[in-house]
Amino acid sequence: MLLSQLILTSMRISVALCTYNGEKFLAEQLKSLANQTRSPDELIICDDASSDSTVDIINEFIRTAPFTVRFFSNEANLGSTLNFEKSIRLCQGDLIFLCDQDDIWFSNKIAIIEREFLLNEKIGMIFSDAELIDENSNKLGHNLWYYCFPAKKRKEAMDSGLYRVLIDANVVTGATMAFRSRFREAFLPIPLDLPNTIHDGWIALAMSILSEVKFIECPLIQYRLHPGQQLGLGSLSAKNTNESVRSLEFLLRHRKKYSLPMSQTIDLLHKDIKRLYKIEEVISRYPHIASRFDLAICLDELIKRKFEYILHLENRLKLPENRVKRLLPIMRELLSGRYKRFSKGVMSAIKDFIIHPSKA
Image 1: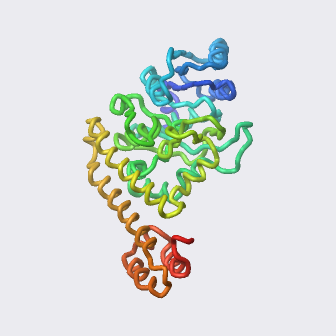
Image 2: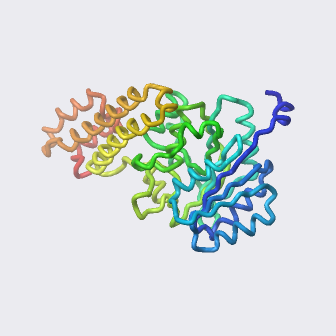
C-alpha cells in the first residue's frame, strides 16, 4: 500500500484501560495517552470498584481529554480478567489496544501499530517489546523481552509458528497488545478455568491461531515493575499467589523457570502437562479456534517432549552414588540425545560424572 493511501485510510481506534486503586501511576499513563501523535478515537475506562482517588483522577482527565472517554465504574470488583473482558466488549473501534494503569506509552505507539495493520490486512494482532522502569520511572537497563521473549523464542515463533510458543508459555504482555475487533467474538468469553492464564495469555493464544500475528522488536511502552500489581506475563501469573508479577525477581524466574533443583523442575513439568491437557479441553469450547488447526498434534508433541524431559531428569537423579558406576548410565543418556535436548550436552554429562546431580 502506498503511503498516500495509508494517510487517506482511517481505522477507528479504541483503547481499553482497566483500573483498580491506581492513583499512584494512573495520571502519568493518561498523560501518555493524551500525548499520542495519533490519538485514539475513544478511550474505554472500566474501574473495578477502586477505593482510592482513581475515579477522581479519571474524572479530572475526562474534562480535558483530546478524545472521547467512556467511563464505566463496576459496583463490585470483577477481577482483572473479567474487567478486561468487559472493556473489550464495550469498544467500538476497528482496532482495540489493551492498556494497563501503571505504564507509560511512547508517543508514537498507536501510529506505528496502526500503520502495520494498514499495511497487511491479514495481521490480526500486534504486540511489541517494552522498556522496563521502576516505580519512580527510572529505567532498569533491560527490556521486557530479555526475560520473557528472548531471541531463541522469537526464532522459534518465526520458524514454527507463534501458537506453538504460546501453547508452551505466554510471551505476550497485554499492555503491548492490539488486535482487530472483528476477532473478539471468536475468543470471548475469556475462560476462567485455564491454569496460570489471565486475559492476555488467552487472547494471544487465540489470535495466534485465528490470524497472522506480528511482533515489533522495538519497545513502544515503558512497563513498570513495582509491588502490588497482578497483571501481565500470564504463563507464570501470580494470580494464585501473593507475589507480584511486576517484580524483577518474578521476571528473572520467568527467564530461568527451569533453572531450579531437578525435583522442583519435575513437579513444574507435571503441572504444565496437566495445563496442556486443559488447553485442549478449553479450546474445544471455542469452535472458531478449534477448527483452525489440528491442536491435538501440537499438544501431543509438547506433552511427549515434557515427559521425555522428566525422564531425563529422573534418570540423572537416579544415577549411582559411586562415580565409576555412574559412567555407563551417563553414556546411555548421552546416546539417547536427551543431554543435548534438555541440558547442556556433554558438559552436563561430565558434570554429572564429577558431582552427583542431587548434590550439584
